[in-house]
Length: 258
Image 1 (cartoon, rainbow, N blue to C red):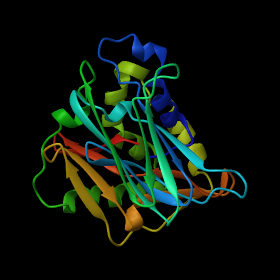
Image 2 (cartoon, rainbow, N blue to C red; image 1 turned 180 degrees about the horizontal axis):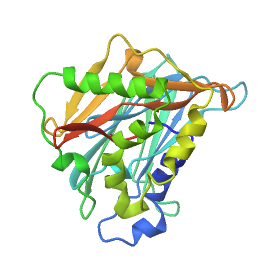
Image 3 (cartoon, rainbow, N blue to C red; image 1 turned 90 degrees about the horizontal axis):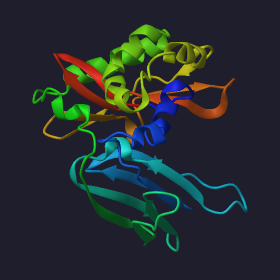
């Protein structure tokens, strides 16, 4: 969920000095995607975590998406891949960095359409919540029912029910950023006041990762299944996107990443 309130700030805190002091803190890795007339997808270990695209304003130069991926990186080898779709003559530059004052880990240009990929081996990083989640090998219907229920919660601004589904995310972040869900209800209520929730998509796609323990739900054109706009906050752009990353634990579905 891309939020305009407290849950967004916790992702920044993941890479803060407080987190760095822990023995097993999230890796401080950022993927910079410099794009112009191109679109695409960033995957970490196959999981689609960020989509990029859009036309830059006139005379502004390329757009840059800087994506912190520490909350997705795991023990052992990680495959970081950027899949690009571009027009003839366009190019997309991918730069992966560990810190501001350190040499680039990886840099590559993709001409037109193509793929840039980098393998990064890590140790002493967190064991994220999907590793201890229940594997689910049944069909997608129970998960899609949970997504539909979440959409209904947004439509009726049931903040308590929405926040409760984010407990797996809160549990994952607590050792590094504290109780990130504290105060989130007030911010979410403010964001949803006067907001419009897009209709629930008629067709949803589910991808499974990490041995049927991490699930990614996408609507048409790979959009998140829940999209909220609020013209009083941001005109013409979503203020919140939700419902993509799920796990199942103790018989219940929950959201593991915003």
